[in-house]
Length: 279
Length: 309
Image (cartoon, rainbow over all chains, first blue to last red; front, side, top):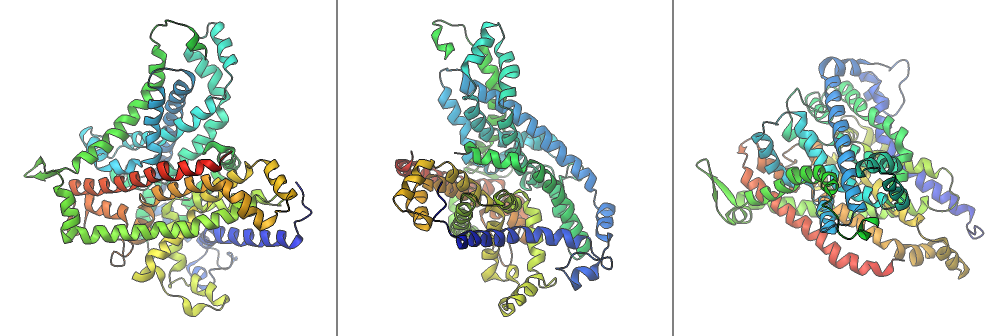
């Protein structure tokens, strides 16, 4: 592409705007993490400076770890997220395979039916979901959350995965059929490994809203035993609202795992978005 | 496809088995409760029995001042919430994407990654972090404004009725600007180079190239972003709940449909929870979102298709 017409000043301008916005995007996060390692005097005296040996203090973290049952909340979140993710990917991929591979009556209708959930949020069914969970005795269990999140994640997963499965070569699958492989073997041994990159994309898209959700843990599983880290942090922050060390430490503890995962998987995520998975 | 060549074939059980788990979970946990909620909105609990009352709950919602004032307030606030997103989030997203997609820009990957960070954080973190920053107690916001000489403009925005909703909308914009940025960025990257080259041959470069060539080509993506924003905004709850509590203070000035639904359904303080009224509000939200999606699908998308390749 020709660059002759682009002037240096335009490049500088672009960098200036992007850099400004990057600062705006990262400033609150950095501010919170930075101040979580300071003493109370440090937090209020010089909020904008990084912790110095004089202001460094881990009192916030010791309070959080001593008071809140964060490790346990963390486990709950992990169980819910991983289990939901597993079911979304497995069931989603199976349904996507059926829709993209076979022609049968009602195929496109079924696709449309499953795609409804992309636009209509599952939250609107909360009243009846709660009744359903009460009736089946699943209130205050992680199973309830896993079921809801599986249903929530499936529409987008089916939609994205069937787009990708259409691209898997027919010759390969037919070769498998000639060799006498069953349809199940073709799916699990041939197709699934080939769509692994898109599965990773779907995984990231599914994972973030589940990990961050506050609504369903609040309504379906608010008990001490089943609190997720998001709900736990919310309640903890409400209780300790005047203990700034503890609040900032709790916020940092909630930010850091997500941030670390994001830094590891950001390439995958961004490739997923920009590869036209969402058209 | 090979399956079609064979004339008479036995019933293909495997299709059913592949589809069954997804369809069952989706139907049982999503579609049936959704339908159940719509149905519940037509019933009322009278002496421990669910009695069919037709549209009576909606008449209460719109006619009884105890409900209608709150409902219209929440709806109005929700519309304002959406408008702020449309006029702030999406233009900023488009601008950032346009800058990012300029060829041979250095550090593009870094900017992209960094600007997307807030989007992955949970509302709880975002709501609380901003609450702390804007708090007059901590003084970060007034201090920063002092640096640029605007300290006199500082007020505790989240605590003032006239500013709180706008402040929260802007916080939400801050969090989600990464999504329009990414989607527009993807759309800009997918514009064929020939089109850009042809434009450059005709002497259309820089800003006019963006307005005349690229913008019309990415309009479908802007349409998708608008509808995603619409659905997300009319379904929002977490940020308001985290930052202002279920009462959406000060004085309900930040109440949106999500928090209104929560209070109606669960009850809060003096008000007892009412699943049927909750269902009625959820039904209204469903109709609003469905209306928006239909407008998009039948009016916007069909007209936009003309610009696609």
